[in-house]
Image (cartoon, rainbow, N blue to C red; front, side):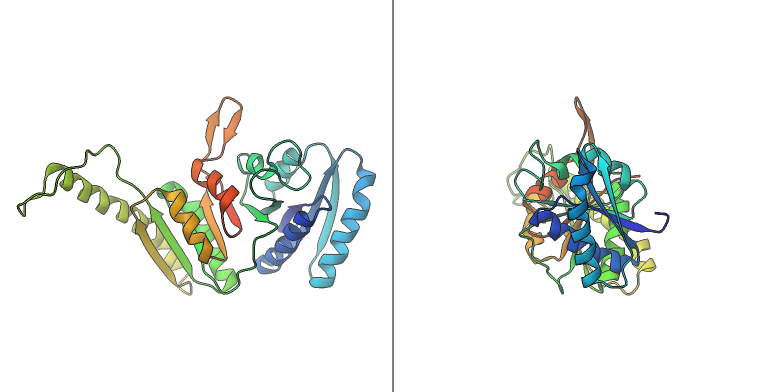
Length: 276
């Protein structure tokens, strides 16, 4: 398929049907085609599952171009390869543990560590929160790709964008409040760090605001650990977007701790965007 497309992994489970529906809706928003992939030991097993996926999608979105493909081998490897040419890759997960069809670990977790483009992870119990804002978790200027995607997603949905820039002071020994108006060296340092952190968020968003003047942006700097703050905010969001912040481990790339936590516990679907 040479057209712009979104790829979704299916396996016949109810969870993957949920992912299929989300992927189809995103394909319509993107104005792209939909590529439905089933990774199986025997390609013949995929025929009824892919036929159902095609029928269901075309019934819901008659004008959407749908292509199906059955591949032999592991689903993570297949979707990682497909993600390189896709505008978005979509998978379903049951939440704390396995993705539909996977008995050996979390497909979404492993895929998020290696996908070459944005990855949308949808649990079977995620509601369709239309009318709520897109939520962006912003750490620093390494999240510019995630920020750009979040602005685009808010524009596609016609919703506002809520930016949560969460940070915490580190390596500063707490001091007793001063009885004078003069601030202590530690307080001065904390104030400087506060101004610097807020400047990061402002600088990162300025040019994106100019590029997307129709998107209403609400930005908050929160002095707490990012994962709990984003988890709480995800209760009032249609979708949350974060950077992957991958790390190299003994067994290969690993997902950053914030995205890792949200992948398992977010109250709405999650889009993980890798840094280029």
